[in-house]
Image 1 (cartoon, helix red, strand yellow):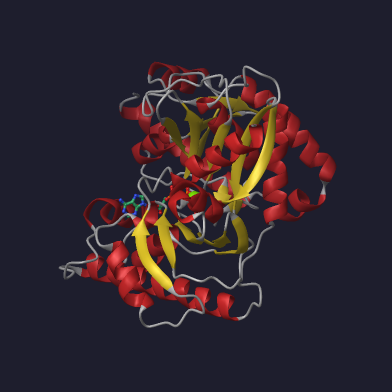
Image 2 (image 1 turned 90 degrees about the vertical axis):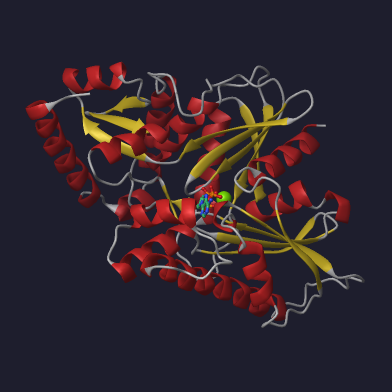
Length: 394
Ligand SMILES: Nc1ncnc2c1ncn2[C@@H]1O[C@H](COP(=O)(O)OP(=O)(O)OP(=O)(O)O)[C@@H](O)[C@H]1O
Ligand SMILES: [Mg+2]
C-alpha cells in the first residue's frame, strides 16, 4: 500500500476523478444511440478478455469453464453463479460494485502488488467486486454501482462492462459452445423508472458473446423454483434484495403474476442514514451484523432500522394486496398457499416473524398457509435459475 505523501496524492487524484466521472454523464445519449451501445458492447467484450489481472481472494475462486448449465443472478448488490456439482449446487459470488482510478504505472503497481481485481478501459483502471469495496474503504468513499434499483444504471456509462468483467471473474466461456445459462430478471416495477427490457437485452447479448445460450427467468419465480418443489411450485415467492422487492405468484410452475417494487435494502440504509445523520454504508454494516427485529431497539440507529423495516414490509404487503385484488388472473386454488421469502434483506433475525405479524393486518385474495425463509437467502435466485437452466437444457 502507498504511504505518506504518495497515498495523499493518490487519494486526492482518485477522489477528483470519481467526482468528475459521476457528474459527467449524458443519460439521454445512452438510451437513444444504438450505435453507441454496439460500440460499448464491443468495448465490454474487449474488457472481458483481460479483466482478471489479479486473483480474487475474497471468493477464493477462480473463474471456471462450466461443463453444464449455469444459473446466474445479476443483482443490485451481488452477482451469483450456480453450477451443478456431483451431489450439490455450488455457488460463487462477487460484489456488483466498482471504483475507478486514473491509469498510471504507480497505480498499476499498487493494484498488482495487492492482488486487486481490475481491468483497463480508456484512461482508467476499473477496480471491481469486493476489491472495489476494500479500495473505496481505504479512500473513505463509496463504491459505484452498475445496477440501480434492480435495473442497469442510467448514470453509469460503463455499467455493462463492469457487470461483464464481474461475471467473467466468476465464469469463463463454456466448455461446450451454446451451453444453457439462465439469468434472473426483475419483474416490471410498479411505480419505477428504467427499462427491464433494455436491462434484459443487454445481459442476454453479452452472455451470447461469451458462447452461451441465455434464457431469462423472473427473479421471484426463481424463489418458487428453488423452494417450492414439494408444493408443485404453487405459492408466492418474494425476493427482497438490495435494490428491489420482487414478487411472483406461481400456479403449478406458471408465473401468473409478477412485479417489483424499487425499494429494498438500499432504501433502508439511505432512509435510516438520513434520519440519524450517518452514512448509509455505516448503517448497512450495523444492519447486516447486529439487527434483531424481535428485540427492543436500544439506540437511535436500531430504532430507525426497525421503523424503516416496518415501512418496507408494510409497503410490500400493501402492494401485494392491491396487485392481487386488482387482477382477474388468479386461478381457483383449492388449498392455502405458502409464501417464501429470500434475498439479503430477509436475513435479519426474526424478519419472517415480523412479516407474518404484519400480514395479519391485510386481506389478500388468496389464503396463505405458511410464511417461511428460503434455505440459503443470498443464493436462492442463482439456484432457482440453475434449476430452470437444467430443465431447459434437457
Ligand atoms: N444479514 C443481513 N441482514 C440484513 N441485511 C442483509 C444481510 N445480508 C445482506 N443484507 C442486505 O441484503 C441486500 C443484498 O441482498 P441480495 O444479494 O439478495 O440483493 P441483490 O440480489 O444483489 O439485489 P436485487 O435483487 O435488489 O437486485 C443488501 O441491502 C444487504 O445490505
Ligand atoms: Mg436479487
